[in-house]
Each structure stands twice: as C-alpha cells, then as structure tokens.
Image (tube, rainbow, N blue to C red):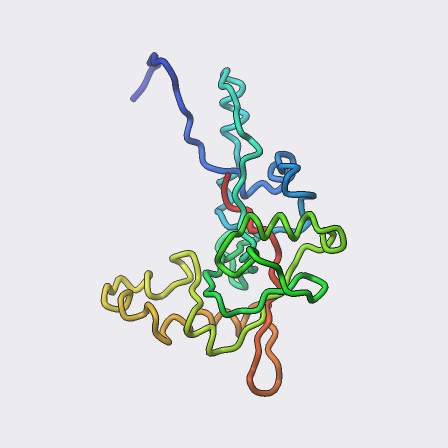
Length: 212
C-alpha cells in the first residue's frame, strides 16, 4: 500500500510487545513494591522486544497506563549458547528442588519452585540482607532433573523442535525431558559435586526480564 490513510474509533489499543530486552527501561519502570531493581539480569525475550513503541505511542498522543505492571521470572539461568544478547532460559521445575537465597537459607513459603514467582522475586529483592545479591541457589540431583525439569523455549527443547508429535507426548514425564537439561548442565553455569549423589546447584540470576 502506498499513500496515507486515516481510521477513527472510540479507542485504539497499541499492542507493541514488552520491554524486557531493554534492562535500563526495566529498571526505570521497576515497581517499588518489588524492592530495588537488580544490577544483573538475563533476558528472556529477543532484542527487538525493547519497548520502543511506548515512546512512539506517547509522542502520538497515547495515554500510558500501568507501566510498572511487570512480570519477571526468578527461575532464569544464562543460556550458554545464546540466541540473542544476554539470553536467559526459564526452567520449569517441579517441587522437589531445594531453593536457597544468596546466603544459603531455604526460601520460605510461598517462594517454592514453579509456584509464585512474583512473591519469590519480592522476597529476594526486599529482604534487607539479601537484596544486594542478584542470585539465588537451586540445589537438586540428576534424578530430580529427569523427573521434574523442562526448559521453556522451543529452541532449547528437542521435543518441540523435532516436529515429532509422538516424541512430544512420550517426552512428558519420562527421562527424555532430562536430555536438554544434561546438555545445558554440561555446558552452562551448573556446578556438580564430585561424588554421589551428584547434587547439582545452579546460580540463578534474578529476574529474567521477559515481559510487562
């Protein structure tokens, strides 16, 4: 189409995506209820999810609302083979892993693996003696990985990228789901003990800036 056109309506909503790839913008709009914004974050969205349309919309006269309403995940880890800058992967955990703050204390209810991520983020960022730390610890063993873990993101999950529907069905709840985790554990930031029961701990930067 060439030329110009004009549409009118009672209201226009601009769906422009999130701001997760621009960490400075995330920190600018960071809500006070979540404490201090972290200095270090991983990025759960591609680089083009940078919030540019917010300023463009505002310049065109749009009314900006709820800019502090953000959603971040505390279960993010750095991708050792990134698809975009600072690429973080969200772990989808079951309940059996042990989750500790940066000082080695077990996180309290409801800060449980895979449960209430915003409550966990608020705890990690507002508890005075740990608010200055941008990581927490996830401790688990290989059996837990194979039984309960999955990775969010189709580019990291062979059960999705293979195009095989049977594999997707069979991979759920089986040891197959441990394959991408073993691959990631061998190459990423996981630390494994030298003797049985081979406990694995991940230092988890928080949050994973992903969406608003």
